[in-house]
Length: 549
Image (cartoon, rainbow, N blue to C red; front, side, top):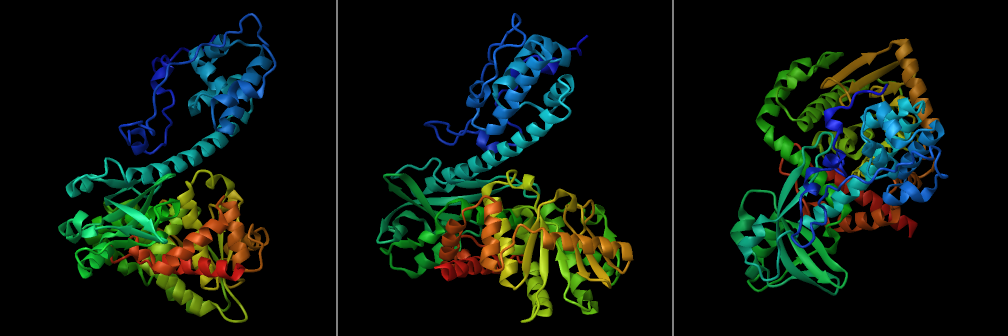
């Protein structure tokens, strides 16, 4: 006898194509003409009633895969249908056994959206799939997340011109916003943008006459704002951003009829969106928590001299996730620097960042840049170098949107720029390893602040089993790294390939931003952030590209 039907399962049309996890702003219309990013509800498909032929016709790739652009959703659909036919059940019979309506089974077999986790578990159990359907569902979910990331990038660029029409009055431009999506720690951000018409002139982006379009008082207001120049061409609009402060300085110093020039390096694309996403989300959180974060920092100074401490989340009070990251990272950096003089050999570093959101802290937290400077000076020499190992399992790649993966690569480039040999292993069993510096055979400095249920965990240990575990981890990462190249150029190229990024394109984008500086595009306002790491990483990647040429 089948499981009783649940009331919330009786109308599949109420959730059709509403993919969980898609940033909210993609569910909203972005232009009156086409609502190109709105998700529409659709009626459930007709039931594939094969009651008279329970085994049905041979399953072909055209049945489910063509209904969905995500290959893994299609594979999952085909496997569900294949196993149902093997069991000799019709769709209504299978639905009755799992407590769902036949429409749910039909949608799952047609590949019309990704089924819910509850439905997949019920199907996996009823069809005795031994976890096979669940495994396919996880892969399809990761693939879906990657596709959503691409939509977010396109949507964010598109929003720069929402509501803008040629000839609009200046005050109409102030309603324009560029929104970035939330992440695992980021809350999402909104950046006001003043969109102005421009044209290309011999490689220059020229907004003319700038002072006739831009109200100077708008640029004097103490807030983050971008001036976005829109160049209309045969292939559509292209956008170029300039930080409010830089635009104000140029217009103030120029004649009344002088144009505003914006470097083409500041094109609004996935690379600059990565920078915007990281800078604005870190900046907003740290500014909002500034006073409380100062108080929290003072509260924990009493723990500085202790060789071992664990700080519970209660110490953070109401701090945001980003501010908790800053507090833990800052304490761990101080802990490591206090004890590096006790190390007899160049240590092996193990770090826990797996995604660009976490790795952006290396690029933007001012204390982490200073930490890299000091440790590089201590441990790198002409005859030896330190190593820093990451664990980036394969499933983290498709579940990160492409701009986020660019931040991960830039963090590795920053470390390589200081002479730190970066290794990356992909085995997920190492993701639970604490952050450490290992002085082989003698002692380890433990410092964990990310992927933890506390603000930080720090220690100094000579416990032999712990040293053995850390030694095995460091050895595995070194011998099984996916970055086997002998030079930084080859290693970063290999990392770009693993992260599914176009290395040549990244080199070109880094070159342009290295020449003009990131501050011209976006500047943090928090005293706790610095662009030094981002600028250095871009210069390093650009220089590697010049060596190639």
